[in-house]
Image (cartoon, rainbow, N blue to C red; front, side, top):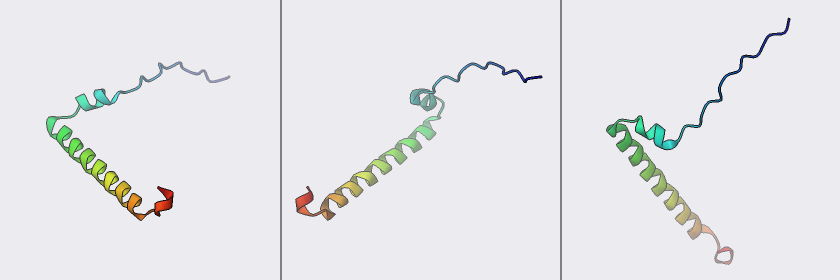
Length: 58
């Protein structure tokens, strides 16, 4: 006898705003601090890479 597949509803996509709404103000502050730090690091890294590349590649 074949096992029958049980049809389950597709999970709906979770929007970032929905996740954000579940965080406490303290958690939101921490996430914002981490995002700012990560963005700053990426900008610094990009600026350093621009300095390091030869003028002919710019």
